[in-house]
Amino acid sequence: MAEHSLVAAGEEPEERAIEAALRPKNLDDFVGQHRVRKQLSLVLQASRMRGRTADHVLFSGPPGLGKTTLAMIVAAEMNAPLRLSSGPAIQHAGDLAAILSSLSEGEVLFLDEIHRMSRPAEEMLYMAMEDFRVDIVVGKGAGATAIPLELPPFTLVGATTRAGLLPGPLRDRFGFTGHLEFYSVPELELVLRRSAGLLDLKVNSAGFAEIAGRSRGTPRIANRLLRRVRDWALVHGVEQIDARSASAALDMYEVDKKGLDRLDRAVLDALITKFGGGPVGLSTLAIAVGEETETVETVAEPFLVREGLLGRTPRGRIALAAAWTHLGYAVPAGVFAQEQLDLFEAGADESPAADLAPDGQ
Image (cartoon, rainbow, N blue to C red; front, top):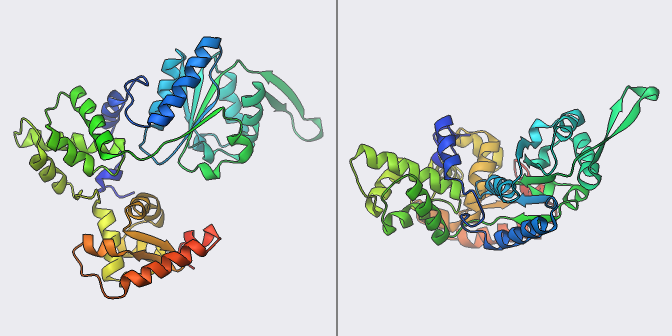
């Protein structure tokens, strides 16, 4: 991941602490996701009225929309302790057994990126979720013995950015599934107003709108940009942040009006200037911008596709007409017609592999 990409940058310990302080602690303070929030509130309230642990919950959606925050809120609303882990950390059934056997009654277990768990651990989780029991295998070969271990009732909260990779049997064991959507600019302004209050930061309405408009529909990015604008204002002696100062700060960090950062623009610029708008294979495009293939595919592409700037076709990636215009290039004759044909072919292709092939083959 590009270290100089502000919207995709890693968090330093101090930044993580600030991020944690800005997290809402209950559903009433959580901004946006009205449908999911309303449904989840009903599930939790019914569980409290019955005096039972809440059903297992699955949150899906792109990074930065509040899945971890909602998991913490589930534990807070149920007045239960919270245990945090992740799918990549559970590579053996024994890893999961150790976590499950140490849970207390009513505890909330949060597994981030649950789709990345190992298959043996996943199969153990089926029985744990449904029957609150796991079988511990002792010994090897013909002498192996399965010892049943009873578990106290608990609530599993899973989070995934790739819901399609979850096997059906695991997905069906969740009593409630909530898919989180990208935020609108007005919703992000509400997020920023709350965060600015917690940071004791003075920002006017135009300043909030400027930051929200560059935040890619993601609260995590909005809060990160707000902190960078705060730094800029402190250094430049600005007491109240307005649209002009917010714009100057974010321009310095290379986040443009549409929310594109350095990597996003490098990808589009390479597509246009080096490959005539495409199509070009993903690995070739990554080499052209000096980044790893995975970085281009997971960090830059989703936003560029969502904004209608880049297209993924069976023959490779293409720069759409809006990308030429946004970067200040004249759109060559015939580009619009060709991109429509490429996207039609991509839509007609039934095989997802064709769309995702690294070289567009």
